[in-house]
Length: 167
Image (cartoon, rainbow, N blue to C red; front, top):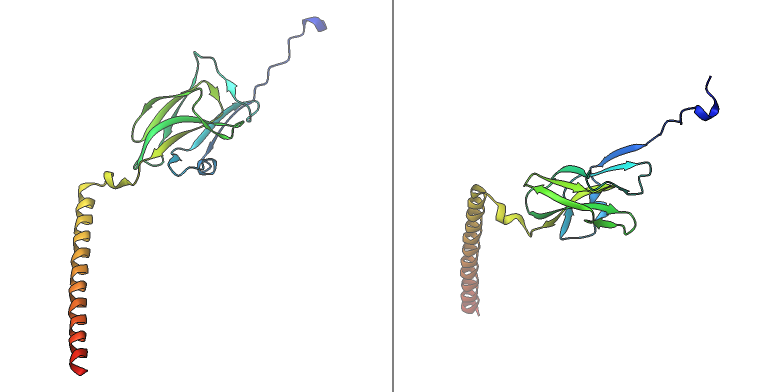
């Protein structure tokens, strides 16, 4: 029989949670030059509203797949700072990036995403076939405009001449 001093300690309970938001990123960003270009993912231990610091030798690594591949640049690994209510790069760094995805490493657990700059319009990324089609459409539009201008000039000249004769 075991005495109360020799009883084993109660088991340690740890609550671990992970989550994925597919469309919340646009709600958390009020900027016309930057977008959240991934799903927002997160991992928590015990309290989801608090950030858990990880040991420096064991950071969390994530691979984010870009939602948009054209017209974006400068991928940054960010987390949602619940105190400042904004995206922050502190404690996160980009390991690798490509057109399709970005790998990140962070020294804490919270909500994470990829922040990317919008690089103007995506006209620079149009392939040759579409560029040729746009060139032909522009040429056809200019020709139609010139024909309409010539017809307008002829009609106005004829009416002016006709009104001159009748008066």
